[in-house]
Length: 340
Image 1 (spheres, rainbow, N blue to C red):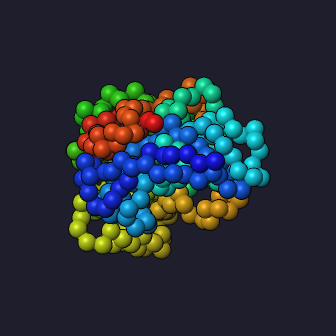
Image 2: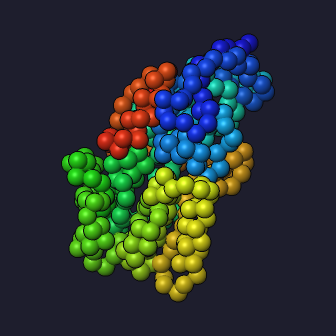
C-alpha cells in the first residue's frame, strides 16, 4: 500500500516565500516501520537556520524540513504490533516533519496522551525533551536553586521556565518588554534583554545563579558564564547571535565549543556544556529509551496541568511560508505550529 503525501520542500537558501509545495508517492511501511498521518509539526530555530544553509549538520538541499511531529498511525509494516494503528504518536525527525504523511521507524514513536490535542502535544516534543534533558540530565538543577533562562518567551525557553517552576526551581527569564507579562505569567522573574542583563541578574542573585541556559552564543556567552555561582553550570544550546553571519556556518559553533572547553579546563569550580540532543547513536536502544522516558515525563506534567502548551499560532501546512515568517518575526510567545 502507498499514499500520496503533500510535502514542503526547502530547495536551497531561500526566503520563506521560496518554500515549495510538492506531492509524492510514499511507499508502504517496511518491516519495523509505520506510516503516520501527520497532524502537526513545529517551526523551530533549526528550520530557520536550515533555510539559510547554516544549521550545523543539515543535509544537502533539497529536503523536507520539520524537526518533530505529532500524528496518527495509519498502517504498519511487518514486525510492528498492529494495535499501533489508530494511535496518536510523537516523533523526533530532525527533517521530514513538514508533510501530510511520513514513514518512520516504529521504535521512534512515543504515544501521546488523549488529553492533549496534536498542536499542544507538538509544542512539547523537541522543546520538552530539550528542556527536560538540559535541566535535569545536564545541569542537574534541584528544587530551591535559581536559574537564568535566556529567551524565556521562546519555544524551549517557555518550556524550561515551566518545567523549572513545576519542580520548585526559581527562574529569572530574559525577554523583550513586549513579552514581560507573558514571562511573569509562566512564573519567572522578567529581565529586559535589551538592558544590561548582567547587572539586572546580579541585583536579583548577588551570589550568582546555579545554571544559565543560553541559546544566543556569540560574545554574550562570557556574561552567561560569569553569572554562575560556584559549582554552577552553563548550558549552551545554540548560536542565535551569529545566525546572519556570512561564511562557514560551522565556525561559530566550533569557536563556541573551544571556549566551553577552555572554561572547563580552568580551576574555576564552574561547568560549561554544549547540549546536543542527538549525542549518541540515534538508532541505539538507549537513546530511544531516554527520548521516550523524558517525553513521557513532560507529557505527564502537561496532562496534570503543570505545563501549559505555548501554541503561538496554528497555520496550515500549505502556508508554511507564512508560518516561517511569523516564527522569525520574534513577536510571538511559544511555538508556531503547522497543521495538516
